Amino acid sequence: MIPDDLRRDLVDRLMDVPLVGLDDNDKGRTALLGGIPNAAFFTRNSGNSRGDVMLLLLQLEENFSRTGEWRLLQIIDNALGTVEGTELGVDLHAIRDQLLLVEQGNRAVRPHLAEVAQVHLFDLRQPVFMCIGQLPTDPGTSGFAVNTPTPRLLAYFCESLKQRGADNRTWSRNDVLTKGPPLVIDPKHTSAAVVRSKIDKVRSLLATKHVLWPMYIEDAGDAAAVWADLAAAFTGALDHHLMVTFGLPAGMDPPPGMVRLPAPKFTSRDVSNWVGDIGTTMNWQHSVTQEWASVILVDYAGSPDDLPIELVYEWLEFHRGLITQHQTADELLEVLRDL
Image (cartoon, rainbow, N blue to C red; front, side, top):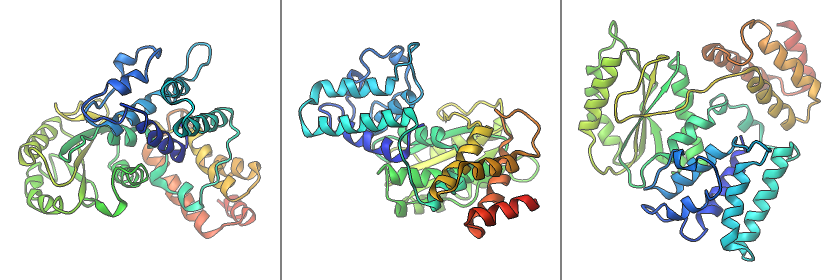
């Protein structure tokens, strides 16, 4: 994945390429895909130009040819063909150079500790940007679903969506809110009918804010009933976006009309990258973050490429608390060795 700031800059500059930024006319954006295999099968948002560009970049970030050619650079090269020699062309060349440094591992990224130590920013880029990219241009009701074994992920998803949507100028951070903690619907304790009782409140919130409404639903029938109720209650154009997100157990399909988001997959490498970014920000030696990552993972004996989501969030919450209390390498190592 490329850094968020570089992705945002690339989206901004591509939107300035002639014909690319036209809503309801994706010919200019389709032209950017010239020479890229299987582009006809990419997920698109033809009615929202900025969302469409974000979706295209997301699908090209890890797309390489058999000979190692990075398809993300190819979309920039296609854009440069129409703006070479202009100020926009100069900007695109600069972004291309930055992407090459990212690919080579040489780009120095020094974000603030408050950014890299956020649990809600841990490995949720793909589902979050897929969500943002598929929003309509005009506010309305959008339904998304992600398979996850825990409602906890939905809370972090909403926080990440709020921040990354603001970072990418989809909305202002003060203009979006989450309708409470994830509502858990299950046959034994909370019926699907409880959602209907909250519709009027949500309708009033939409007059002034974009609303994220997360729910964890264990039964396919309940999921279908809830989505049908909401789709009927919030029809047509709205003052702001209503983004309904269902968390569903593994293997459950979303109701028709909802967009399935890619389920995040947590790995030991993701954990190492998370603590590594913190260590880079703090100017720590690599050996410190290596020891820190090994402590986080020491009690897990399963596959390093498929860590349990609930357990990972428990680790991250605990260790984020450690770094806020112990902000020198020596202090942190002393605490870690006592665990």
